[in-house]
Length: 220
Image 1: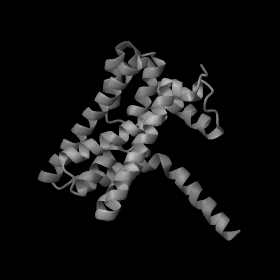
Image 2 (image 1 turned 30 degrees about the horizontal axis):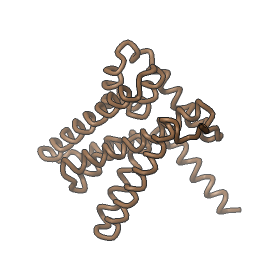
Image 3 (image 1 turned 90 degrees about the vertical axis):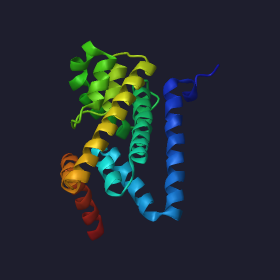
Image 4 (image 1 turned 30 degrees about the vertical axis):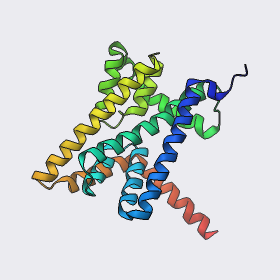
């Protein structure tokens, strides 16, 4: 039997990522017709997660009046979607299925981050992955956590159980912390601004280079 991409677990995960993305597009399209403000919020939350700002995504939902269940469910959905893509792409890039230049560079950065934390987590196994993903630190999160799980040779079920339980726990904690501040001290706007700034700082150089390149092209 011919060995194809869909015969691999990672290939099926990649397909799951595409299916989850299709459902997300349908959801955003629906609200784009029925409630444009909700559609804008859904897009901004997705963007926040893609640049590593799970807290920023949750804050956006709260500021725009999303309740507990929609906020937790949507942010968790986005994290699962991103993990399906990145985990599958990482494994497939190591097995020579995906070897494009930009993919190699991106996965090299993820590998570096994972290797920096691997030795700290290895003695704890799945429990270590859970606490690593749950921790509100810049280098933590489900993407790096799942890759560390792969490096530790955890089974996919054990790896994803620890990763997604840690993710869900973190989202719930962030939501109720933000909600507490908003209800009692009306501080979430300031905290949210600080989180956005923290998320953007590592990307300022890239943003500057992008603007400079666009300006140079415009002059030419």
